[in-house]
Amino acid sequence: VTDRPIRILGIPGSLRQHSYNRGLIRAAQDVAPEGVEVELYLLHDIPFFNGDVEDIGDPDAVVRFKEAIREADGLLIATPQYNRSIPGVLKNAIDWASRPPRGSALDGKPTAVFGASPGATGTARAQSQLRQAFVFTSTPRCPPRNPGLPRRREVRRNRPPHAREDAGVRREASDGAGGVDAEAGGWLAANRERHDSGVERRGAAP
Ligand SMILES: Cc1cc2nc3c(=O)[nH]c(=O)nc-3n(C[C@H](O)[C@H](O)[C@H](O)COP(=O)(O)O)c2cc1C
Image (cartoon, rainbow, N blue to C red; front, side):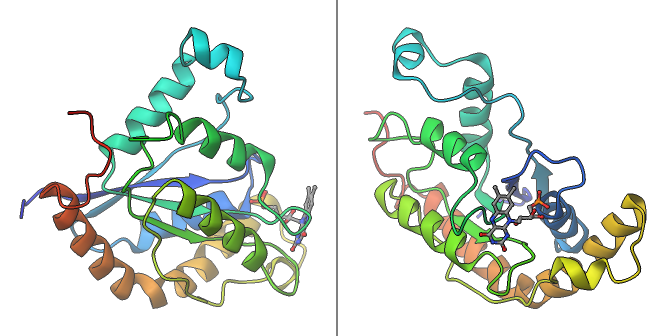
């Protein structure tokens, strides 16, 4: 057991400047308990996956992304839902990070998934598909929760400008995220101990 903070890499699956899912990661930063640091990681620089490019060598943005994942104790992914599925931007980043298939940066990395979208079922389907991908990458998933995150139209009731809209999302998301905070914190701490002790460090190079 170490005294260093638990480091969480927070990844929004949207490139939009006023993304609700980026807001969720910021909300997680706001409600992170003492001893937990959440770093916001944006996916703007990640190119489309291309096996020919990979054969030559990972592009710098991909190298940085994989390093950030390896250095983190866990991942927190906020996904929008696009056409009942995962946004391509997020899936593409996960595809890069999943390589090489054995011993990838995602292998054994504790990961929690949540998200915000305006539809009636929120991001349930996108989250489910993400968890499915993480089965293949041997990425331990935090048990699913339903924190009751806000639907966009509730935030838009008064047609606020972006600044107020962002603030509203962050406030309401904080309320929702706070509900799962204690349980998720305990789960991460337990996983970090296993990770640090090597018990779950699967696929590591000999
Ligand atoms: C191509 C596309 C498909 C979408 N499909 C869905 C959907 O299936 N369900 C849903 O609730 N919202 C859907 N939306 C709405 C997004 O979830 C919404 O725009 C959300 O705010 C995007 O996340 P962001 O705010 O983090 O950028 C879709 C949006 C786009 C652009």
